[in-house]
Amino acid sequence: MFVYADNAATTPVSDAVFNAMLPWLHDRYGNPSAIYSVGREAKAAVEDARVKVASLIGARPEEIVFTAGGSESDNYALKGTAYAGRKKGRHIISTKIEHHAMLHTLEWLEKQGFEVTLLDVDSDGLVSPDDVKRAVSDNTILISVMAANNEIGTIEPIAEIGEIAAAHKIPFHTDAVQAYGHIPLNVREMNLSTLSLSAHKLRGPKGIGALYIKNGTHIDTFLHGGGQERGRRGGTENVAGIVGLGEAAYQCSLHMAEDAKRVTALRDRLIAGILPIPYSRLTGHPTRRLPGNASFCIEGIEGEAIVLTLDSLGVMASSGSACSSGSLDPSHVLMAIGLPHVVAHGSVRLSLGPQNTDAEVDYLISAVHKTAEDLRAKSPVWENNAPMWAKFE
Amino acid sequence: MYSEKVLDHFTHPRNVGEIADADGVGTVGNPRCGDIMRFYIKVEDGRISDITFKTFGCGAAVATSSMATELIRGKTLDEALQLTNKTVIEALEGLPPQKIHCSVLAEEALRAALVDYYTKHNLPLPKELETTASCDVCCRNEPRCDK
Ligand SMILES: Cc1ncc(COP(=O)(O)O)c(C=O)c1O
Image: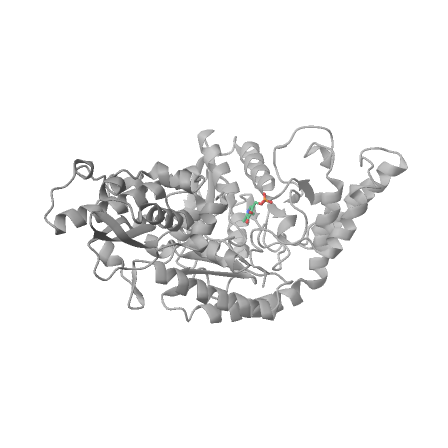
């Protein structure tokens, strides 16, 4: 059996999205900036997509700027807001569990003279709104907290943090790449100034995303060029990609609630099926988590080896272990929730989508059990059904 | 990414297991780093008549263990002393740069098993084994982790 269970990494393009995109890759090639008919129809398609992307989060169409994906949106939001605010202050608040598109941009901003506070999270991966409040100073020009974490699925208290940001009149950004199209988000209720999203996490194509920018937000242009996107982002529009993102957002507006319910049920069954493995644990919050995210640590075996063994059984999954990331430490997220190295090494993430089935979940459960047994049989630390870490320290 | 050879040795590792009456056992690596290898050897008439391993670690850790045991099985002790991580890498048709340390670990696991053999049997240690490297190949971010 083949089971794709890495929907947090990327998702299969849906038939609806594929069919919506096709004409714009071939027959309908006009440049949206051109004033003749072929250009006007492309422009209309882009504007139609903008309405669909905006309406899913309660934004106005003119508040949506199309980008080349989540990473660009994060770069734009952080650099644009920081530079627009640098006369007021230099302090930025974010968290230790952000995606690298955020963390590496923040590191770069530090080199440019900005000061960055990265907040801790608790053992479930939750950011505390009180910590945000305490970190705010007169010098703070931006608060940015991800809507939901890509590795462990924890959903952050964005509305509460938004209230704090609003009370202090500080711009508030969220990286909603994992959340958009999966859980309800409302930019007004959450007091957001900017929000990053990416099409390929909601069954749209790769390399296209958007940044919501609330009307009136001070933000510097990130990609200078022609006057596209009302001067905010130069470059001839990726029309097919934009149409694909629009269709993906539209499909979510029709099916999100029902899909979330079904996927959550699949996820909970998957979690219940895997946790009986001795010395295994769930990572992330038990209930405040993305519908599709089931992430674990299984002691005594190593994450990359888990991924490769699952691959040999036809299962596509991922891991935040050190070896799978090519670094010496397990992922910064697993470290931030306080897992010991020996536990974090056994990380595996299965992420489901609406296209996954009950039969696939059954197969995933048996594949993970088999993987744990096989690798533990080869592992020198596994003796008498327990990991003997102490013997090796 | 991994070569077909590496994937083959990961998915179908040769010589996995323990030898109950091993003549030498060597364990290297540490839990914090995420890879631990243990090699078991049986020596008969100056030859490594049997060799097995158990490994906790990534794909490359398992594949290098498997390949190292394949290369050593049946070799004389003198030949075994000449095994380097380079030979293991070549036999695996290459390793990604960040996985080279796994092959070093395999070389060290073999050397540790040989040291154990010579020591247990009160034999003089060959000069090749006098300088046993520390296990900190995997922990370059730590000063030294030779526990
Ligand atoms: C939370 C989060 N932010 C940002 C990104 C980057 O998005 P993209 O791959 O579209 O650049 C991802 C996806 O990998 C993500 O999960």
